[in-house]
Image (cartoon, rainbow, N blue to C red; front, side, top):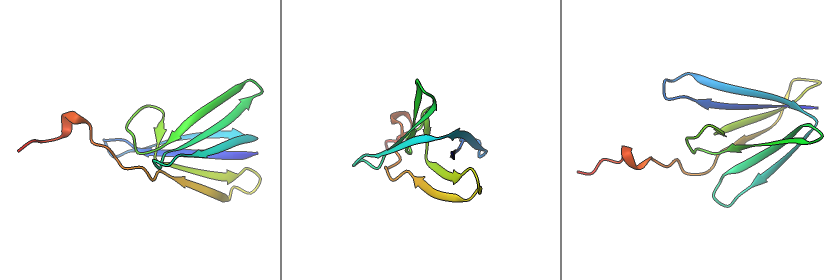
Length: 93
């Protein structure tokens, strides 16, 4: 079993965390720097979390993988894609 800990910092400055315990997970890296972590909760319940700097509900820029038995971090995934600024935030001089 492994414990997947996903972290992101909200615009207010507080840190949001999602923790999942699973026996199966897959990591898929893309050339853009984005990483998908797909985990299985039950035999027919697979979910994917995006590890990227995109600002949307299912995106976390950091993921730590812990061994459930020891609680030690065995791997970490950090988004390597470029943070994009939404068009409404771009200032034109």
